[in-house]
Amino acid sequence: MRARALLLSFVATAHALSIQKPDLQLPPEAGAKAKDAIELFTSAYADYKKYAWGNDSLAPITKAAVNDRNGWGATIVDAMSTMKIMGLEDLFLEAVDFSSKIDFSRSKTPDKVSLFETTIRYLGGMLSAYELGGKKNETLIDRSRELGDKLVHAWVGLNDIPYNNLDFSTDTPVLEQSGIGMYYIATMSISVKLMLSIAVAGTLVLEWSKLTEYTGNSTYRDLTERAMRRIGTNDSPLPGLPAQGINPSTGKPAGDYITWGGGSDSYFEYLIKYGRLTNNASPEWTSRWLTAVDSSIRYLAQTAVNTSVPDLLYLGDYTQNRVRHISSHLACFHGGNWIMGGRLTGNDTIVQYGLRLTDACWNSYEKTATGIGPEVFAYIGPDGNWTGSTSTLDREDLDFYRQNGFYIYSGYSYYDLRPEVLESNFYAWRATGDLKYFNRAVDGLNSIKKYCMPGVAVDGIWDVRSRNSSYINHTESFFFAEVMKYIYLTFDHPEKYSLDKYVFNTEAHPFEAPSPTQSFQPSQQAKMGEHLVSTPWTSEVPQISNAPGINRKLSDVVQQGL
Image (cartoon, rainbow, N blue to C red):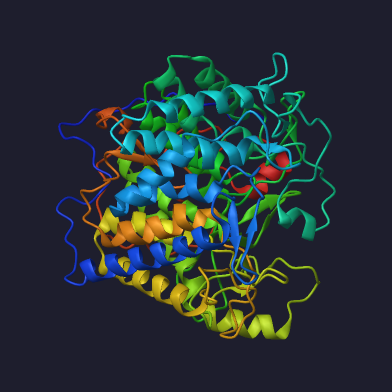
């Protein structure tokens, strides 16, 4: 079974593409809400400076420094782009000065260096800050080049796929097998040990292509494009949906687990974003993304049943010839990604699916006691099945599900300051101008201020169902990079950092993008505001490309192959 890249016949139109709604109007309270967001950011960052300056992050309960990203000061680098966007010039210049002096030649901790995390946080943060600062501080490019030249050792010989973990003291990858796959796999006792996830190999190309742009060294771009291309041309369990695991030594898939959640998420995210960043110079990235979306609509999209909340659309996971009725906070980026890609390609079907996915993810916030969503949640699909560790659904979970349209997967009721729900909400707001998305950002900010502030900085909570939850004791750097940025940008003037001018990496660092061209449009210009009727997952859906097997039912695919 091979998922082939599409050869789309793009239709030019007379008008420039627009991801954002033209003439989007902010409500009168937007200015005050933007100030509230800035106040939360500066207050939390001041506590980081007080208790953990120069270290990676803060443990707010114990008021201690944490070095979980090699001791290079992840919070400072990760927060830079948000500082600039918020107009916090003094903090931005201080962070740029700090970042310009980091010694990336060695890890300051015994930990190995993660190719994935180091790329999205450090490399992405510095390159974005360089652009946002007017491309004046060349030392940021020097540090980025030095870091990139260390990270290239993740590729061994002629291998297409890099390893994730590196020993900077020897410039060699750590080759041992590691179980870094989804927690879903672990909780379902599926015996698949992943050597690498496609999210690692497929979440590099935005940052590394920017590094090529500013250094003139095409090696960075070529390596990461090669990794993306290998993932996309491998055999896949369903059309356009590669397995989560991949073996870096052979480049071959490992297992059959498909998900838009962690371990696969940002591979799909970067397909359309790289197409946008390069203005579709090569149609393969946009085409592969369209194939993945087609296949997801056909095989994974499910409307929850037996609940009083109508029209909740989820993307299930897939493994062992069946759909798993499960989703996650990490997966909730998909709504915004589909909205962006649907607008870019002029396909309203994708946009409307994206809006429904965004609404379902927000429902996981709205229906908890804290107004904050859990790490993993599940649902009952049209086939009457659910996902869990027991053969029957717990009575308490079933009652909660019937009232709210989801239940919290056992052991995953925590909130770790993740951004994805608010991220998709931001895309929905910028694309539609519907005030419900603005108001949801207000609610999200208020919930964080009410339940995630232990007295020092901000903190995750162990149980979103409890208004008196204990704290996790960790202020992740991505709170500053992502959560605060997406909330603030929802309140800020839409022409500032417009989605038509910037592409955000998976850590929410904005990169300058060229003016979009008509070459993305294989169909009619997207029309906003139309309601998409909820239909069962086995029914016909509007076909949006010619991917092999896309019109076949999941049962046929499982029984007969593609």
